[in-house]
Length: 93
Image (cartoon, rainbow, N blue to C red):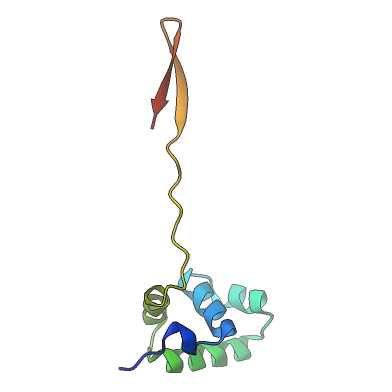
């Protein structure tokens, strides 16, 4: 199965793919892209054809493979001050 690379996707297709891969429902995607439900369905179908996939899961995997998903930021450890015997100590959790 041949799949497109990142350079072959239009910017609007990249944006659609990112939103789909992030798990947004079609209604939210349509609203964010200012599209009607039928137009969105057609664009999703066209995107699947370009990517050579058949499911939303496969499209999400393609988005990750193409580097379209932003990496999740790791939160720095939380630091807490505890008072022990009148001495403040820093605790990392």
